[in-house]
Each structure stands twice: as structure tokens, then as C-alpha cells.
Image (cartoon, rainbow, N blue to C red; front, side, top):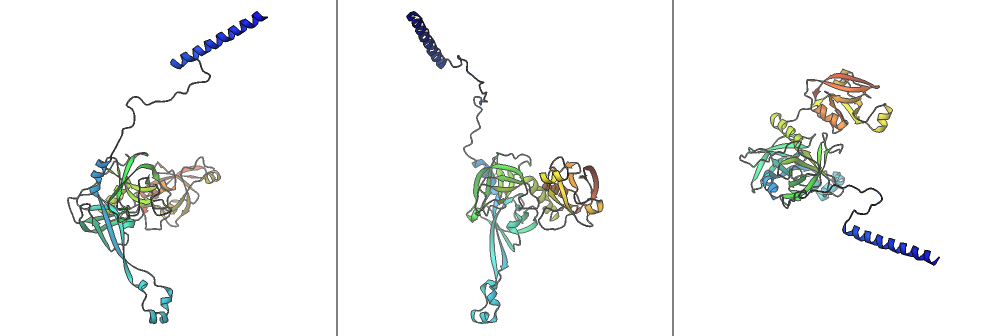
Length: 385
């Protein structure tokens, strides 16, 4: 019996020594011992494949700064007087209220020089109802500016100063912007002077924000503050990608969510304003809304793509063509409609006086109706077309 136990102890000791030796070898030569489970395969960057390090954007700023101007507007307003001043007794003893007298108020904003002969692109709300407009160039010159035209539906305006040889900004290609691109916002925040802030493109094609009638914003976290409106959003090469327009803020200051009008839309509107004095858009007289999953289910639709016609203007182009409330618009001249915002843009792009083919679904039947497009009238800011 003693011999059996001795043999067993020797075997256990030998096994322990062998295991220790294998562990030591595996430490110096990994992978020798089999392991339970599967190894996770990860992708590693090749040698030299790391992101390119950029230590400065001075070249981009140097290229675009001379094209961004400060805009100072003044207008005359009348502040309503206190109701007590309507009483003759109070007027007799206290005199005419100061509040009832016209006052001049000023507004600060920014603009972008788009041509050497003095055309400047800015926001409509920067110059709205202004009596006088002064443009301060980066070299210190102050010039009076005249309003060429505005487009409240996109919040864009064009000014002109009587000066030639100005430093015009370079426009980026309309489809070159991508989420994650580095961008610089240039303007005059709070009137402190020309300022450059940096961020990235946080999102594209932002709409349904209730800012403008036609929305297709670039979202960025580059700091945009009051006074930046109308200024330039440029890429890392100093080319214009957007016009800074609005911020999302609960305090009035920057919270990292700013919006810029993309250069593709700004360029189209600018050209029409310069050539025609305003923007002409198509209109067919319908009111639309987005298709929610609940609406899609009630109308037995396969998806939420398209726009539901909530109302048709009596006697308007759509009404004359036979379009009814409850129809679902899915195409405009074979271009797909994703939601109410895209439909608004597609119809606005149609030339007035021409026929347009509207593809729709009525009671689960696909139809196509021809509508004669008319010129879009001035209307309230709402989802209406």
C-alpha cells in the first residue's frame, strides 16, 4: 500500500513540474498552449496609417478672414407708451412719455464677400427693416451698403457696397461636406471683433427645426454666438461651406449646436436675388404633413416615406388637377419624396407655368396626376406648399 501511495505522489509531482514548465514556455512563447473559446480578431492600423496630425488651421483662417465683414444696421422704432400716459391728468403733470418717442436701435451681424465688385451675402434677419446699413471691412474701412434683395423663406439677403477689388471668398463644392469634417466659424460675436472658432460638422440635412420655411441645415459644434449670423462657415482649406444662421440654446449662448445654410442653397438664392431681385418658387396649393407610423398603419401604407396631403386650397392648382386631402404624395417628376420637408423643396424648385407629374397613393392605388405649377405667393411660415 505504501508503494502505491509513493508512486501516486511521484506522478502528481511530475505533472506539476511539467505544467509549470509549459506555463513558463508559454510566457516566453505566447500561443503554445491551447485556450478555450475563439480569439477575437481586431483590425489594427498599419505602420504609418494613423490620422494625419494638424497642429494649426492658420492657413484656412488667413485665406477666408479677409472675406468676412461686420454689418451694423440701424432702424427707427416706436416703443408703446405706458397706458397711464393716455390719461390727460398724468400728461399734464408728468409730460409726454419718453417711451412714445421714436428711437433708433442698432443691430450687429456678419456677412461674406462673394464677388470682388461688392456683393455681400448675409442673413435676412440681420438686415430686416433696416434704415441704414454699414459694412466694416477687415482692413478697417466702413462703407455704406444697399440692400439688393432678401429671401425670408431661407433667411438670406444680398447687399452691395460701391467698391471694387474686394477679397471674395472661394465656394466649396456643394457635395463636398461630410459629417466629421473640421470647420471654422468666422464672424463678429457680441461685437467683440472678428473671431474664428473651430469645430466639426455634426450633422447634415437638418430640417423640421421651425427656423425657416425651407430648411436643409449643416449642424456644427463650432461656436456660433449672437453677431455671428451671416458669417462664414469654412472648411479646413478656407473654402465657404455655409452661412452661419442660428443656434440651439436655452441661455442665448453657444451650447455646441449651431446651424448654417449650406453653400449649395445659398448660391442658388443669391444668384436669383442678384439677377431678379428676389426668388421665384413653384407652388401647387397643398398643405402637407409627415407620415407617422400610426398614419401609415391607418392608411395601410407599406412605409412612412412620402407626405400626407392634409389640405388642398380651393381653386388652386392641385384642386383643379383633382388632388384630394388624404392622398399620399410619393414622387415629384419621378423624384422620391421622403417627408414633408423634401416635398416642400421639390415643389419649390419647379418652374412656374410648367406641368409637373405628381405621383401619389390613393386608397392603396398608385396614381400620377399632372399639375400646372404656379408662382409661390408670400405666405405665413408654415409647412404649406
